[in-house]
Image 1 (cartoon, rainbow, N blue to C red):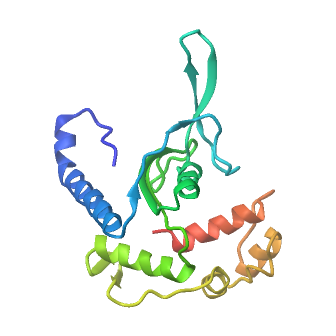
Image 2: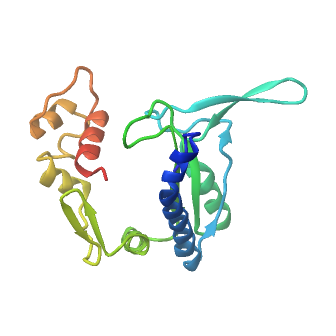
Length: 212
C-alpha cells in the first residue's frame, strides 16, 4: 500500500492498514522461507519492456557519465528476471516486487503496486495448487466475509479448468469459440463492442466474474 497523502492526520488514519500490511509481508516471508524458497530482488529499471503486448510500461532514461543516454523501462512484472535465476540455479524463489503498469488506474488497479511472484522448479500443477491453498490459509483468517458472501477457507478449494468455469459461470464454450469474439459474446448473451478482440472479451468475462 502506498501512502499518497501528505496530510499527517490522513496518514495517521491509515496506520492500522500499514500495520496489517507489515504483518502480511512478514507472514509471506515466513511461509516461503519455511518451504525452502530464496527471496530475490531483481532490477526494476530494465532495458527491454515486458513481452505482454496489452501492458503499457513507464519509460525513463539512463544517463551515463559521458552524457550518452539509453532507454529504460520500469518493469511490469519480475517474471523474466526471476526465471533466469531459476534456470541458472534450480532454486525455488519468491519476490515481493514493486511493479508499474501505465494506463491502469481504477478502484482495483493502481499504476504502481506490489506483486508477489514465486517459482518452484519441478513442481507439478497439483502440488502448486496445494501450495496456493496453504498460502491463503496461512495469511487469511479461517472465515472471510466478502460483501454478502461468507467464505470458509477450512473447506477444500474447488478446482476447475478454465473451460469448465466458463461453461458454468458464463455459459460459453471457451475452446469452441477460441479466436472468435463474436461467437464467445453470442454464447454469453452479451453485446460486443466494435473491434473488440477475443482476448479482450475473454479478459472482460474473467475479471467481471472472478475478480476478487
